Every structure is written in structure tokens, then in C-alpha cells.
Image (tube, rainbow, N blue to C red; front, top):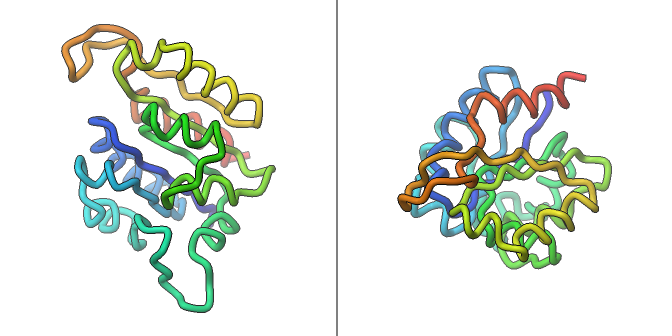
Length: 180
């Protein structure tokens, strides 16, 4: 059984992680969910634990098994790494090697050959900001693939590119890589 590490960051789109987790599980993947503190304000870890049938990882200092380093063990068992939704904040952390939470620490511990994806979700102006675009390009330069956000009416009332790609498009992108 292949393992997807699903990173969930602080975005209004975090609730869609439940549908992603459910879809991936139904396709036969083992889903290990890693949540940032901010993401837990949008959706509870218990929801994603119930759907994934795995403990949800939120704290880099919490070791589930005392003789194993959790963020290293997670990174070792990854067949694919996906951050959906990927906020501007997590994109900046990943692009700049900042490892100050469970999600960014696991990302740094991944082997080079693990397929890595980000599915941005944020306000249009945040997404179009040259700093965010630079961070996405840095990630692409080191092997990440971007699942492009949709143009839509956003939660803030603005219209433009920044809405999380559809669950179907994300699942299709990930399944295409893992089914090989």
C-alpha cells in the first residue's frame, strides 16, 4: 500500500482535506495527515483521523513511539508528499528551508526522489505577489510540482486565481503519479 503524506496548512480550503483524505483512502492509499497549527482552526484533526484511520500529526515535539523520531519516520515512508491547501506561509517556509513545525520539518526530511506537490489556496493578490511566485518557482526548481489554483470568487469576496484546485483535479494528478 502506497503512503501519501497530506500536509494541510491554514487556509479556508482546509476543510477540503477531508474529501481528499476520503478519496485517497477509497483508492487504497495509506494517508498520513500532517497539519499546521493554523489549519486546525479550520478543520479538526479528529475529522482527518477518522477518515484516514491514522493519527494526525500536528506537533514536531510529540513522539508517538519513543524509540522513533516521528518526522523522520513519516518522511521515510512517503511515496508522495502533497500540501493541499498550501498557504502563502507554508510555501514560503518550504521554499526557504524553514523547519519550525511538523509539516515543514517533514518536508525537509523527504528523500529527493519522493514526488512532491503543492496545491496553493489563497487570495488572488497573495498568489500573484512576486514573492509568492518566486517561492513557487524555487519549489519547482527543487522538484515540486504545482497543482494550479482555480479562478473563482474567493472567500474574501475577490474574484481571481487563488481557489484550491478541485478535489477531482488534485486526486487525478496524484493518482496519475502513484498509479505508475
